[in-house]
Amino acid sequence: MEKFAIIYDFDYTLSTKNSFEFSLFPSYGINNDSEFMNNIEEMRKECNFEMILSFLYVLVKMAKQYGKPITKEILYNAGKDIEFYPGVVEYFNKINEVGKKNGFIIEHYLISSGLTEIIQGSKIASNFKRIFGSEFHYDENGLVDWPLNSINYTNKTQFIYRINKGILSNTDDKKLNAFMPKRKRAIKYRNMIYIGDGLTDVPCMKTMLDRNGYAIAVYNDDPTSAKSLLEHRRCNAISKADYRENSDLYKLIEKRIKNCVKK
Image (cartoon, rainbow, N blue to C red; front, side, top):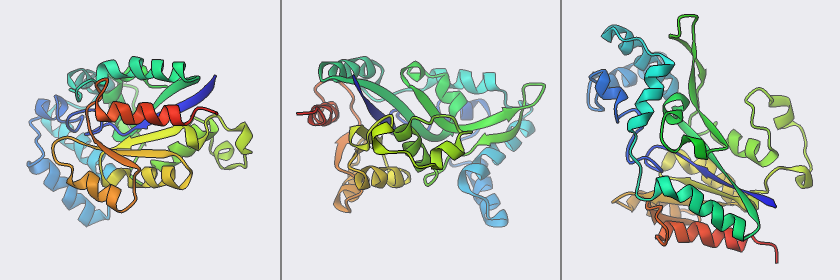
């Protein structure tokens, strides 16, 4: 059977808020209006720091000051408390069946600026073929010593190309950039859906639109941002972030899958 990829952002796309906010931030006494966010902005202005790297730097620094240095176990356990939009947990198996009935093997991918380790601890992690997220490297004592990967809104797009070519390892740069005939590529752009929630998803959404893929902007209560993306042709459709069967979002995904069936 032919492959079909559904690609997701994570925070506010699948989870109801930032993945850090459920238990990691509270365990360090951090909230989004606190000194933490101010420190990030100060570091950015002082050092011309890229946003995600600044975030990771300040997080590690404050964790040490708190007397609880970050480990992989701490991050993984923080993922267990992540809450998701309605229907998310059950959605994957159901949409896989839709794909199967229409002659597709559905592969789910995640591209997030959030930490891979936290997402891997969540109840939906096993549904993804690959999770592309920011990551840490750990020293011989299991403590964070360096960012391994940092994913921001622009370099997210490289993972769209990786999925298209079937080159999923971060180390295969030569293969990724080498010419590959369309007939040899793992998943056609036409057989891809990208689902995100805001401006940081625009480069991936535009990549979909420019290559005959499909992009959906989701929202929780306020559709203003999503409507703006649709108005400016940065996505194909918008929907409330409700993944339950027979919801508008579910029907959009189902319709796109059916529309990609070879006639």
